Amino acid sequence: MLNTARPIVLRTSWGMSRLRLMLLMLAGAAAMLLLAACGEVDDVTAISEDGSGVQTLAVTISESDMEDIDGGAKAVESVIEAKNPGLSYEGMTKDGTDTVFTLTLEFADAKDYAKKAQPVLAAGDLSKTAEVTFTPPSPPFSSGYTFTRNFTAKELTRWAVKALFDDGKLGSDSESDIDQALDAGDVTVEVEGTSLERTSTFGDDSAPEWTSAQSVGFDSVNVVTTGVEDPSADSYTRTLTYELKRETYLDAKDEFDAFFSEATPEGGDLTPAEETGTTWVLAFPAGTAEQVGTWTDAALATSESTFSVETSPNSEDPFAIDTRVVDSIECAVACGESGTLSQALQVPAGFTGGEVEDPEGTEEIALDGGPEPQVITKNITFSEASYAVTVNRDGGGSATMKLSLPAADDEVVTADNVTDFLGEGTERSESGDLVTYTRTAEADTSSDFSGALQKLGFEGVEGAPEVSVSERSDGDYSVSLAMGVNEKLMSKISAEGSWTIDGDGLRPIAVVEDQTGSAALGEEAVTVDGSHGVILNVTAERTGLGVGAIVGIVVLLAVVGLAIAAGVLGYLYRGRIKSLLGGSSPEGPGAV
Image (tube, rainbow, N blue to C red):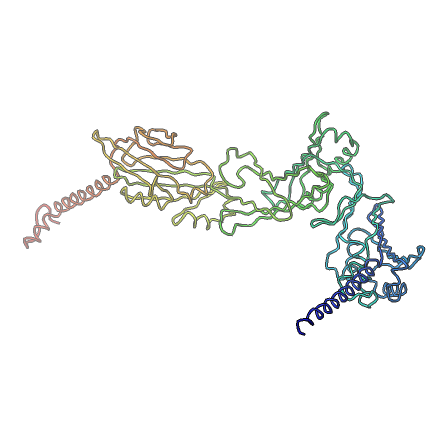
């Protein structure tokens, strides 16, 4: 019995499942048909040349579709009037058997358009930020209009569909069906009665665009600005160099000539291209940072160009000054789709430190541009450097290092910071516009002298500076030196160095080895120019007495002098001395 009944149960269950499935499918299809045919919204946006305009939304619902809305047209109109978030309701009309509900959104410009659309989108539970742009012609670069908008007519009417859903008028219990209730109809954007062509659709990166523009632009624009080395003066000059194909210029010669004329500020200078040339040069007069930005707007058919310069000490290096430059320029119009914009600063040679071949020259610093400041670090360095070394026959001696910089730079760095950098014992002196810092080192022997030179800021080929003196068989001396400024000190020197090397009790008579290649032998000293280090071997002859010998002689003379003085006094007082020694009264010669 159990085995024969099982198939019957299975057939009955299968039949019930098929029936339920069919009912569910029919119900779903009915709901889809109901929502898929609710209506359609057409969109016409009419714009004036000044950017003002009106967007007209026409929601059309057919007679059959209206029957599926609980309450019909009156329910729809009631919702529009009660829940309208900012559109103007123009009323309900008939188009044959269809019902048309018309709403409008008037705006003064693109910003006003986006501002008024925002609450309408929010009322439909949309979180996007409304964005609208309207670009009018910009002769000679553009001959038409361009319009962009990142929201649709369906999104501007979503609030009405949602309100009908919330009131239970659509016969659906799924909120996801709201976006299926209206179909997108025709979309038209026109300016002064002329329709714009849609060139893009909704994408991840940009809003749809409608345009009638035909554009041309410069092949390249190079912008060079001077004056940033002294921001306190707030006086800058700017030069723009335009490259433009000759045929492009000739196609709109009058418009380009008018543009260049209007772009040249009072006091500025325009150098037009030669008869067959392609280069125009526009030089601004000296002006403030704000004026430079304003003039740049005119020179590139743009807006909101920004130029600013600020300086402050570097937080880590007192010898460095940070200059922050903002040079924000938009060249979308003047440069077109393929033109390039380059920006640079022209500054005095050596502005950022380093060796300067031509002190009167200039250098250029490329700028990235944009709203963020670009930091340019100016390294203040010593502009003169000289070293004097005196060697005695024991390998000891003395060294004097003099480093100078302009008084204006010294004021920025401050004497305290320079002294702290160079070390204890640094002396400061001023002469005209130059400030000189002097350090000295002394030692009697070669080993002590090497250590003293190292403290001064010198180093050897490997390790400490090397100074050695050895007597040769012929009575002359071999003097060797291997030393140079260490890396820390060298980083603050931009000028070439000069050396003077002489002797104490020694006179150089021949240069045996010179790895710098610039040593010159004089009557009393060897000089080396254009270097901050020396590797020398010099032959020297003995001259007179060294310091030690002179000191010994002075001491000996002092002793001898004392002995002679004692003898003279003994002779003069011999009688008294004799009486003191013998106990008798002094008498006769020598008695006092």
